[in-house]
Length: 332
Image (cartoon, rainbow, N blue to C red):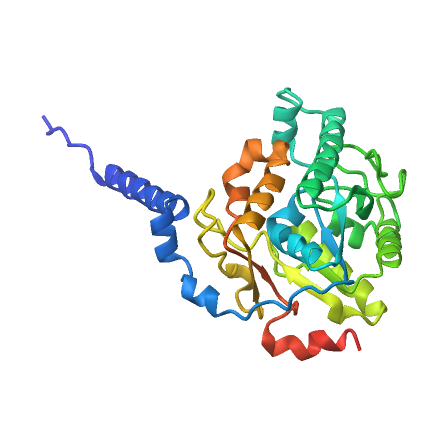
């Protein structure tokens, strides 16, 4: 009779190692002390040059791919611009109507359909006004364009002239209440026409736009469009760049740690970043604006709150220093 074989312990060993790895990653992401030790040091952030201050009379235009991006990246500096006497305007490209899990929660349905996704878009569009008010931005200085969430790259490329049908809302034209151009087709031509209308109306001295390195497709697509339109006007040097989706789990740690620095995003750490230091009052109002986006904070509050830090980051160039000459030539 053959001897019984004892079960191999190797699978248990690998499972244990995998669990340890998951726990270590969770600690690095979520524990302030560990995240700070493994993140970029506060000394490095403090060594960054201060961003040029805003001035009275300037007109500042924030280009936001989705509701909440303007607050996460720049909620503090938008307050500073207004305190300095500048006029601040915000234009949202989409109403953020592409997140099915979000619609499932807000619409209380397990299987959100197109009507639920459109309701989410209108709800998020309304949230922009509460967030803008928290930052002191008047409603008449805001623009909701209402193009498809997750579809800007398609508009920029294959659907520049022919309407794109958004897969979740099933819309092929702007439907959001209060939009700049109701019924505008979901095409790149229409989006660019709306952006030109905004630029003509605002006549901005400074345009805040996502950097090309931002991982989200809507974000880097908007960056390309902004670079193109501002270069057409010979005003590419008026662009300033920010990042939201900057690398795996960035920024760390998650949650509210407003005295910690916001470090350079790994996907864009070679950009010539400048630092915008925030006062406690500015951080408090930024957090209020973050929480105005209730549809989002119900799902990803800790990610959003992680942007309420001691500073914000802004780059005067879309490319690293070695390519700055090329970038500058676009506005010549």
